[in-house]
Image 1 (cartoon, rainbow, N blue to C red):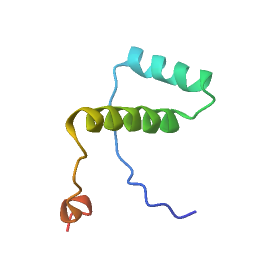
Image 2: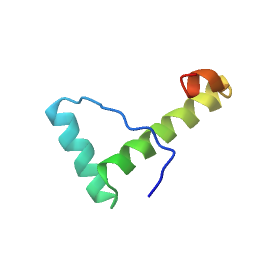
Image 3: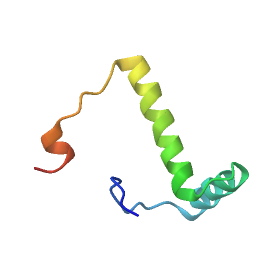
Length: 63
């Protein structure tokens, strides 16, 4: 299945990873889906307070 998502590596302290994984399970989400959800909330809160973040297409796709 093709996707437009970029794969990244991320490091967590063991306790934080455990807790996020626990929350994901409670929300019936995969860890990845939970992290995407949290990132979405963070961006929306930031943009609500500071205005929309403009996308630089060249930086977005490392052109």
